[in-house]
Length: 341
Image 1: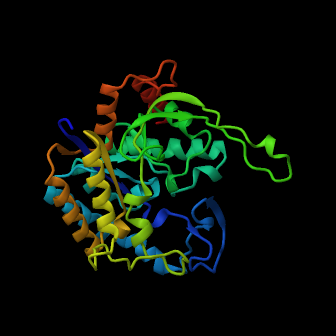
Image 2: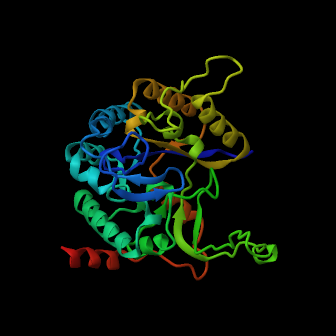
């Protein structure tokens, strides 16, 4: 094995109180259908009568965020925060603390809307508003985007390219290597009313793009195993992040096992950790992060970076595919910004 280069980053997904929640997760009043998701089914906006979930979001946007900022300061880590426009406008003080501490801020919808369930016009409106909000707030256009729910629409990639977005963090074609994103893949769905020969066809690859994909991993994400959501049938929140018995494996061990395997098998790799203030702002999870950070820091070649830095490094080593759809230029993007002001 050669010299190690390990690019580690922390991705903060911050839905806070803007996120639409699933029907059946404790919501009985004003069931306004808002979006659907492959993970959670039909969803709806919270109502003020369900204050228990609003309180969780308010806690995340204030207490959880401040605790994570303190954690990052302790270990001199710059993270990438993907903040919905609703959260940016609701928690301006905390978001300013994130910005002023030197962290990266990227796109994450306005109300954590599922792109799959929006019309193209709605997607354009949400992107334009949130892109302008972040550009005004940060003094420069955002470089990256994370699709809410990690669900992308058919039009999403090309729409992001038109706004000069350089990287995406919504896919998982790999688990420890960045790659050039492809858009427009298609496949034939099974239709049992037809002859089998009509659906037995391979995937058709779409168009190459000049957008860097920095993959995510559900296995290195704090929310699925450790987020408590009242009345959700698959809600956790009480999962112990630490190994209890010698033969047991829990969240902390799974994350460390991923890192240790990648370190053994690859000279260069990226290590994606996705966390949420709602979850990782809790004491037992914060202490887990301290132990994981210290475990990672024991290894040679480790660098804590933002996703923007990973994107820049990947592009410096890998030319874009020939004929790829490229992000709009900085000049084109700023013209769009000036026209909207």
